[in-house]
Amino acid sequence: MKPIFILNGPNLNRLGTREPHIYGTVTLAEIELSCREAAAGHPVVFRQSNSEEWLIEWVQEAIDDAAGIIINPAAFSFTSMALLDALKMFPGPITELHISNLYRREAIYHRSYVSMVATSVMAGFGPGGYALAVTDMVRRVGC
Image 1 (cartoon, rainbow, N blue to C red):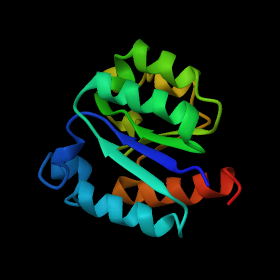
Image 2: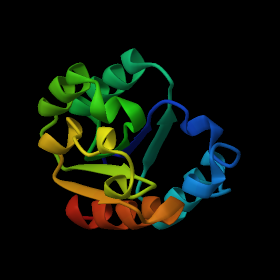
Image 3: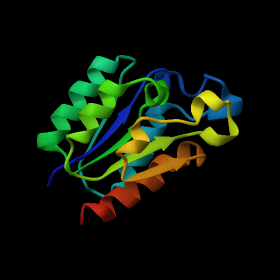
Image 4: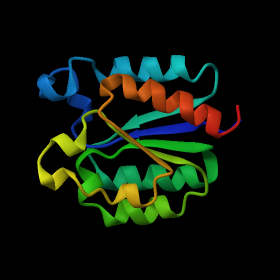
């Protein structure tokens, strides 16, 4: 059974202390645990990097090894055509995930390159959005 890749972009390693009025107080480690629980035995690869290079490498790894991708590209959503190009090559479902509702924020957050290739987009569900995305992805990949 191919795993679901859950990829997290820059500054998400600071969840729990970073702008708690926007992102809450849940840590990325706690989010990872909730994702594994929501996967109900389906394998999960959970990663975070502040590096655009590593996110692209992991997307390319997923092309061969993953059933689906859930990605919170954070700021790279709005800046990275390279990440967009890598995601275009992925043959399975892609869920773009954001903790906050991007459309309640400044206009610079309203245009995501990743949304152009995402099968689905989730935003504004807080840290609990991850478990929702995993539950949906498990259904999408047929497990």
